[in-house]
Length: 294
Image (cartoon, rainbow, N blue to C red):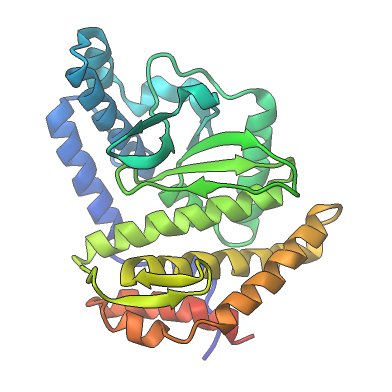
């Protein structure tokens, strides 16, 4: 079986239509003029959540901002096809959306500093050069940089189903590491969109052992881990020969760790049997095969 390119692994029919339909529904609620791009899709969910918060707080001015704003009004936050946010820790919100902190673009949002923008641009360029540009454009158009860390510190990143297309991540001074984490979270957003686009529902009462968590996980979480870590391994393998400095040993350790994790994963065929869409099953299976087969 010949290897698939990263672009082919994430090329799945139905996702773009799902994004456009969802955006149009949000537009009909907010009555603003959003477009049909992946960035519009991601921003639409920020506007919808922000409008709900404002309505509950009875803040008419803030509600009006969320109902009038479009992507064209946020160009000062952009880095090409992406919006880059760099909020302070005190700006993060917590609610029923997520147990972890998150951030919504709002009237007080300011552009990220030049250093952060430069790091994001370098990370996006690296990802694009190695075949993951489409994934990040379509599934991580809003990038929220959180805490700057050293390589020897734990890096946290996450994505939320209520804010598709947005990635929250800590970062270091190394664009290769940021690209890895953007790809990981964009992969989660991709899978969420793919499941929704193909009306694929997964049982909550069936679990599989996840070596990444060291515990049983529902089918949803298990498949998410297999898919997201597969794409990050494929990226790191491509970038490693060109990586110099401290990031090199860091990425080597990452690949060794992932090799052990995937070696302990033998339940994928059974887990995939719960995915009704054959095309989606094939994409996840091929990604894992690319990792464990070489």
